Structure formats: structure tokens, C-alpha cells
Length: 486
Image 1: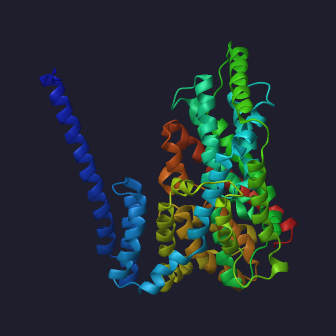
Image 2: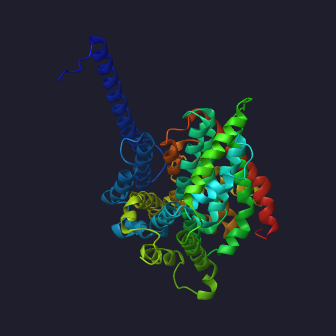
Image 3: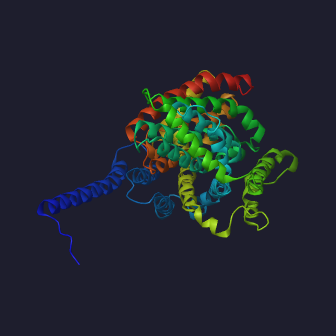
């Protein structure tokens, strides 16, 4: 057997690469230690426990950013750091593991898996694509967006919707010959991400984040936001937001004249037709998925009639085993292993930030800095909350920020004589603004496919942020005023 040997030059290059990798890794570890240490030793005018909380929390945030540890491992470690440092007792810190999103998110992912396994997601996608005449980047982006809007009603999780849309976008790229990280591939994958993530804000049961907001709001005021009420307040603005998100992706692409467009149209139509025919006729399993989703939405709609003594989200979790019944035939026992249960640790760790912040009074410190600025017209107050939320999103996860500030905004609204819903909604919209991938886990997941280049995505996210403020001031405010929230 012959041995593979390296030339002196190749060996030197390998050593240089290894040394560079080690240096980069050491630098990342140094950053995760030095930044929290600098916060702890800095002369910031905060109480010692608040400064310690900020240092430990920044350790988690920085570690998430540089990715020297698995995200879930960081989220598991952070609550323990809070405990051993004496910031809060175990019964307070680990109360985060009883938060509704910790349990509903895996459930939503199971339903998303059922939509994929039964072929319902592909059927919706292929049916939409076959109604198109031209397969340009723009028309394909619109088609993916429409599919995302349809999935918004039947797939109750942002990640699950993106998991349905991403393979479709990749298949289109392969059929059209769009290379990974090209502008075309970047646009289509980014649109798939937006169609999965941005569409969730309009319907209460379309995102775990919405369910968490409703849970926090319920704890603060004593009654929940009804499903119909949420839709009446947010569905119309969400359609504008989906459109703005589409525009922000499309605007970075400058189409060139394609003399082979007709041939490409025929090729993609043929491929889609073949895959659509392979699905066969609409079957009983797909119908059962639809009925299951209707039942979940029905639980929220009938909440006032059923008069639950607990949040209806728990009913959502309780009926999940029905998916695995042999007579239902949606998922097998082995399918349960296909969902990433580690997300439960990530969510609980993120929520623990808000729990501990409230316990030690750090939330009140932040509220104290925010409250004096909340003066003037309702529009000005909404704008301040939006900018505050966008800024906070750089250092806290969306779930942590919502857990920290939702109750505070309800209290501030009461003092100002305003309805709490517009302020809570504004914060929720602000949490959907991100510039860097680390701010949103699903965006990191999207980059993992290797089809998007960071430079173009960064441009699109910046444009989308500007459009987000326009949405708040020119769409949300007048609309919420029209429906009586002010």
C-alpha cells in the first residue's frame, strides 16, 4: 500500500493553517472571558449583584456570538452560574423550565415534521409553483412568500415553516443553476427565511414567541389576548411586514437579461411537475394534519367558552400524543427523535435571563432608564420602545428581552393611561429586527445551508430594519388607532 506524503511546502502550509486556527480559537476564548471581566471590573454605577448579573449574561451572549461552545450548552450553564453566584435561588431560576414556550416549541416542531412527512408542505409549494408562468428570481421569491403565508395558518412554528421552505428554495437553485452564495441563491434562501420567520407575527398560533408574549401579558393583566383579537390587531400589519421583508431581499438583486429564460422555465416546470405527480392524490394523512391544526386553533378560539383554568397552550401540548396513534398514522415513535429537543434548553436558558433580571431588580433599573423617555404622543412612545427593543436585541435573545420587559411595559402603560397592547406589540415587532446572524437562532440555521453570503444578507437586513420602522410608524400606528387600541 502506498503512503501519501506531503511536500515540505504543503507541510508548511498545513502547519500555518493549524497555527492560525488555534490562534483564532484562543482569541475567541479570550474574548468570552475578557469582556465579562471588563464589565465586572468597570466603574459602572450599578449595584454589585446587578453588575455580576450583567457580566454573567454577557458571557453567555458573547459565547453565543463567537460559537466556542454549543448554544444549548451555554444556555444550560447560564442558569447554574446564576445559582452558584448567589443571584437567585434554584426555585426562581429554574422556574424558566416551566415556561410555556419551552414545551410548545417542540410540539410545534412535531407538527411541522408531520406536515413535511405527509407531503402536505410540498404539495402546497409545488401547487403554487405550477401556477407560475415565469421563473425569474422575483417571481420565485413571490411564490415562496405566498407559500409562507399559507403555511402561517397551518404550521405553528417559525423554524418548522423555514424547514419546509428551505429545501424548496435549494431545489429551485439547483434546477436554475444558481450557485451557493451567488446573489440569486442568497435572495431565494433569504426570502425563504423571511417567509418562515416574518410571517409568524400575524397569527397568535404561528410562532412560539407570540404564545410567550400572550402568556406574559396574561400574567400581567389577568386575561389573555384572544386568538381572534390577536389576528385583528396584527394580521394586516404582518402582510405589510412580509411584503417589506420581500422587498428588502429583492432590492439587493440586480436582474440581468437572460436569453435562456424560456428554456429554464420549461426545465423547472418539468422538474416541479414530476415531483408533484410523485406525491399522488391528496391523501387521508394530509387531511388529518389539516384537521389536527384546525383543532389546535379551535382550542384558542373556544377558550372563552371552554373557560380553562389554565393557558390553552397546555392543551396544545396535551393533545400531541394523538399524532402518534396508530389509527392516526401521522408520525411514528422513531420520528420523535428527529426533532431537536436541545432547543428546550436554549429557550429555558434565554428565559432565565429575564427571570433573574426581575428577581434581583435589574429589570426595574432598565425600566427606570426607559420610563423617563416615554413621554409625549403615543407614536413617540412606540418609536422609543421600538428603538430600545432593537438595541436590546443585540445583547439579549428575543425570548429573554420579552420575558424581561413585557410586564414592565404593561405597568408603564397603566401609569401613562395608555392601552398596554400597542406597547407590547411594538416590542414584539422590534424583536423581529436583527442585523447580525447571532441575534436570531433561525437565521444562524439558515446560514448553515451554505447558500447565502453574509455581505448581501447584511445589506438586506439593514434595509429591512429601516422598513421595519416605517411599518411601525406608517402602518401599525394608524391601523392600531383605527381598530381602537388608542
